[in-house]
Image (cartoon, rainbow, N blue to C red):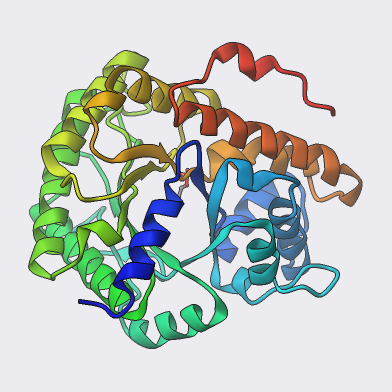
Length: 346
Ligand code: 13P
């Protein structure tokens, strides 16, 4: 058992405390720059820093955000006033998280499929991040649906890597967020998404068990079971909620403290509605907390409003706070679409 077991159990519980979710703001420089470029924001280290400061200094964000996942560049940065972001977060009552994978690369011999890298030197990087104040980590595996993929090779190799990452995290005191993302891209049906998500979660939990990962000291970050973006028949919110909870109940041990979904390219409102419906209709059946770990579905309105201009920071922060609040409500099954229109002071 890890010497950090008690601390990690407490951290995992705090990450999914009632009414709270985890903010993903760990876009790599390449991804962050892509989103900046679309809005005409300079793709510089300073603008990335300024944007992350905007997020982390949003007043009262910790009412709905238990912790945030940072990128390696961000965890080493400071506010304009010179306070390290790790300290800014601790002062605001948010737990520091860190993305530790180094990205999804082409999987040899498997055209169109990816394997996530980052295991080399991971033990040492975990030790450094723990020293810097991080208490949880994230690793994202990517599963693509197509014809005839995903291959068993892709599912098994990614599951194996996720479990190696998770075991190393627990050895070093970081709660692993285990993120197997089944991509929303494609014209597949929701039934096909269910089948692939089921196979993926089976493989992931088999590997986690085999590699002695403690289920009560981890968080699962799955994608929802959903129709492909280009599927002519789009499932209803009720169908997504029902099939997502079903696949999770079939695969996720009750001792996992929480499930925190990614948004994966769904619209902001849909991401919130799906989460809310899962909690309203099936909350009583779920042994784990069901919440969010969104990036785009929380950040997008704030990023667009800010658009790189410091004068827009206070209003952008209100937009961020508002989306965090809506998702916090959804994690309790207390969201109402009418809340979307609640005026924010912009
Ligand atoms: P999205 O919510 O934008 O899908 O991002 C979540 C995440 O952390 C992806 O790794």
